[in-house]
Amino acid sequence: MVPDVSTGSNTRGLIVYLFGPGRRDEHTDPHIVAAWDMAGAPDPGRDPAATYSQLAKRLDHHVDLRTRELGGKKPPQHVWHCPVRTAPGDRYLTDTEWAEVARRIVHAAGIAPEGDEKACRWIAVRHADDHIHIMATTVRADGRRPRTNRDGQRAQAECRKIEAEFGLRRLKSGDLTAPRTPTGAERAKAERQGQTVTARQWLREQAYAVAAAVRNEADYFTVLQSLGIEVKTRLGPETGDVIGYSLAAPGDTNAAGEPVWYGSSKLAPDLSINRLRERLPDQEVADHPRYVADPADPWRHTTTAIHTAHTVLDSGDDAAAQGHLAAFGDALYNIASATTGPHRAELRAAAMAFNRARRSAILADHQAATALRKAAKELAYASNEPGGLAIALLFATVHLARAAAKWHEQHGHEQQTAAAEEALRHLQAGYQQAATPVLADLTRRAPQAATARRFAQDIRATLPDHADRILADPTWSALTTTLAQAETAGNNPRRLLAEVGTQRELDSAEHPAEVLNWRITAQPNRRTQAARSRSTISGTSSISATPHLPATPVSTRPEEHSRHH
Image (tube, rainbow, N blue to C red; front, side, top):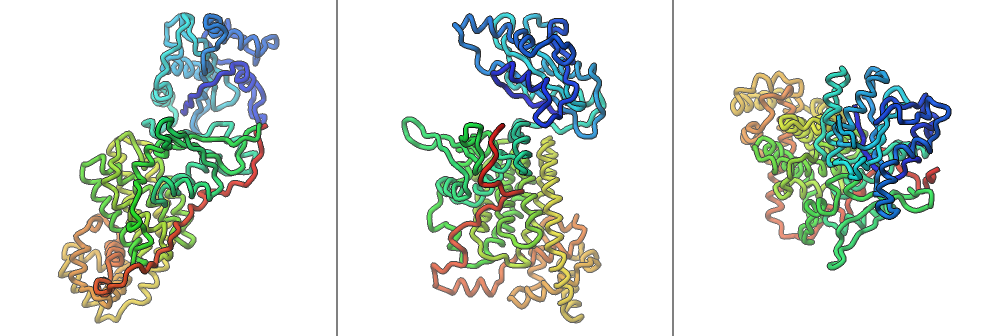
């Protein structure tokens, strides 16, 4: 059961909508199921003589009195609106049950506490099987405004109780860190325009993808504008510094033809200017990712940083863990942008899904995750995808997403747990698409039996507790090819196995040889390292100077949009 609290200032306008046919004729049999006074609330849905104006006048009675006291000035945002909807698959509630739901929510939200004779006037209108709209005017009979602080959170808490008592689907509790959901009007507008996402959702995903890729605040606004997004900044009166900003999607206008602006914090809490600055400190030119010498470095550095993040989640340092989860959210966008192949769609979906898991009420220590964020930004400038190393990175993301879901579950973050699990499913699908043909090719190129036996002896010598499972793993032949390649590159197989075998996941891995295969793949080439250390050549770049622009998450919004009707 989902409540969605908002406020406005047009009593009659909302009544017209509630009792009208709806924007797409979806309203059927609109009528009042509960009210502050059922006898005193005219019901245009049941009484042919009742009018919208009569009902508005009754609801606005205390508002009008207060307006006269204020010399004709109406209290601001005096209309309180809360649609309440059951979850898909829930049974249909009777009018009597919906009436109880409405009374409990206005009590919990502070609109009309039970037994308070001077409470606000309110009605609950049902015009569909699966939801009601609660509407109130927020001036009490004594002229005061109700105490509605944290009203949305309290309404949600009451809905969790109602779900349990009514035998409805139990939804996951939030912690006030979720982004705002699109309004019904925004969804209807997107539907009219043939869009699969609303302008709010599209802007949010673009902003996340750009923030993940750029080095500083100036680049952030520049890249957004290059995507056709309009940017409006708010400057401080004394310093002239940017203290806030709003975004508008290309061609998204209102009835007057003006851009529809969305404040950054209304898109998502961590897109506000202050939260962005915590993650986008200016970097010196020397630290720019274009100066990475080896094209494989961005992939290897990010893989290493993700392994470190996994360790941090187990460290007990919640602030550092939360900082790494935020950085991992950025990394997923850059991994998707730098990836080619059919699995790219799954990686984009994983990045979008993980957005709800990247933040919680725990204050993040972003400095603790500097290495992961910096490594991920290198991927935004990478000019190639180095085969097996990219798959090794995907393999690491799968394990970190699983660890993130577990961490959130341990902290009671229900929505974040679900989001991390959804991201995990997309990452697993993407990994399988990318890894299956590569593992098959490694198996096909397995070394001769004598070499495989020698590697088996290395396994028994270095990892005796895991040897039987590794050698019985279907991916063992692929691992022998990877070991042979590593040996050719100057690595000692036993030393390498001893090094990578001490890391996590081997005990619980279903395919331990597969784990070892990607760990070894992610190890640096020792001969290449030696050659680079002897070289005195500097300034040569294998990384492009321009970051990958964020790909549109779901659909490309058209240049021109239909206006509001």
